[in-house]
Amino acid sequence: MKRVDATGLSCPEPVIKAKKALKESSDGIEITVDNIASKENVSRYLEASGCKVSIKDENGSWTIKGVR
Image 1: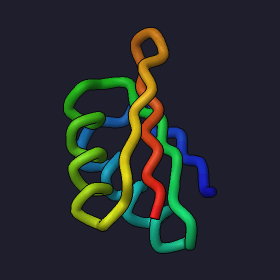
Image 2 (image 1 turned 180 degrees about the vertical axis):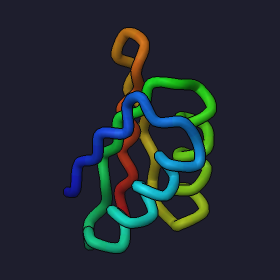
Image 3 (image 1 turned 90 degrees about the vertical axis):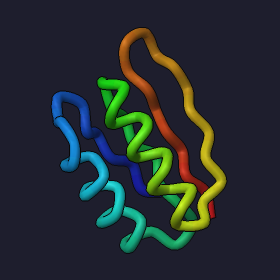
Image 4 (image 1 turned 60 degrees about the vertical axis):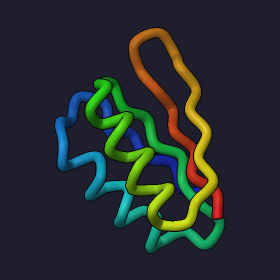
């Protein structure tokens, strides 16, 4: 599973990083973001890409896991 740190980035950068990582990983990705818009947009992108999505809240940041 590919891990991506997108903290400090605003959209659309986290989605672009998620898209790139998903292309490079056959089993899925785990991406960390620190704003709500990025959390929602990355989650939506992963779901639209056919991934099962889970989100872990980590005191002001979120780790989003997208598994194929």
